[in-house]
Image 1: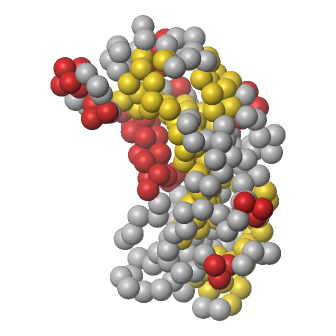
Image 2: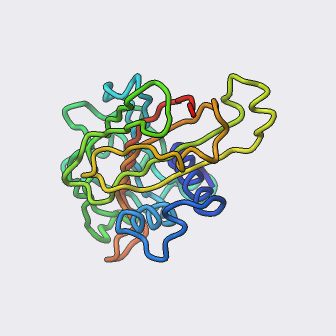
Image 3: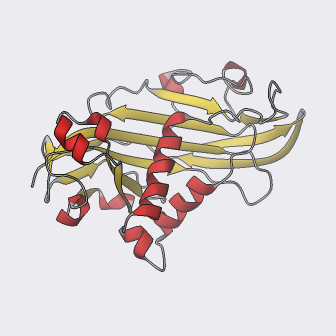
Length: 255
């Protein structure tokens, strides 16, 4: 089976590892918030053939550029077989990108940006419309940190999307491969992850000492903040549209 898209796989792995291997606010709760439920369903949903993902994954240095947008289609799980099911967006020229089993590195044009819009689409199976749906694609996220290092009290801020009800996920990841200090990486060879979900309208978060306690002092961690949208529709069909917008920065932990 082909990979649906690389960055969401990374994000999904991060959140799954977080829930399974560490004590987090999410994993310790007997009841999840609506935002946490969404991300749980979003990451565990099976993507049917023909499902479309719209994604933007940028660094802090490139987040003001709106061209790093990728559109990809879930390929058929049968080798060398074209999808019988296609996603067709209403009002867009699907022939340019959809139904061709390939990814495009940027939007059709910036005047037709996908983000911050309600997109209507229908599912076409063997040339016949099977059902119609729509999904709100949240605004591209913009993230800022109160310093060039991360410590207790560091403030993470993001642009609020008042129409996004799915919350914002924050992911901190330590990878020994990405450390400048070889000795630190040798002494701490395992990947470590911390993640949690916040309401979008909160607009900021102050990092707690407990958020950093499992990471080695002076280590570099990748800090990602993301929004997502789209889970399988309940009115039938397994093909659907989903989206992710994320921004990240590599910051050194200071205690």
